[in-house]
Image 1 (cartoon, one colour):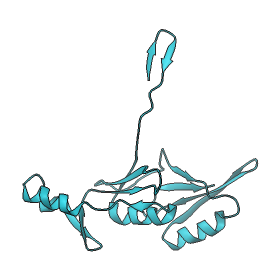
Image 2 (cartoon, one colour):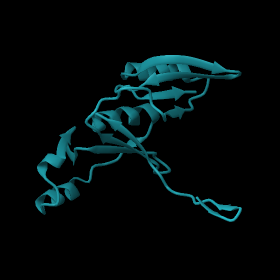
Image 3 (cartoon, helix red, strand yellow):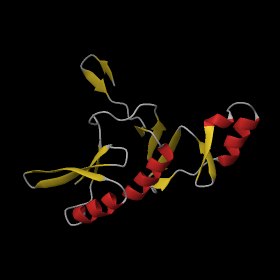
Length: 150
């Protein structure tokens, strides 16, 4: 945002949300299933070309579900808008509460079914909350990242 005198000019930027994790591909699979997005397809031919040309090494890659992928990251995509969440490999484990988390709006009528479905996939219930007419359940994904179902 830039400020000129007392006029504020807002810029609209595209963005993606990035989640640090220990196993990007497995966590991306979990989140894609959890919120109904698509795992971004691997560009296997491009990866092979980069290795063949010496612009990447075999250690930059791995095989996930029989497909060659970049080792350090995996994204999921919203099926219509193309919005992207990237899961990125980091060396350290999660140690405290997230400062940012996703709120997934499932609706009052579907919340408990979603809690049941996601805990069956490896989520853990952390907290049930309410404020006035609003209710939510805070859960953690398999690596401990918080999200709310509202």
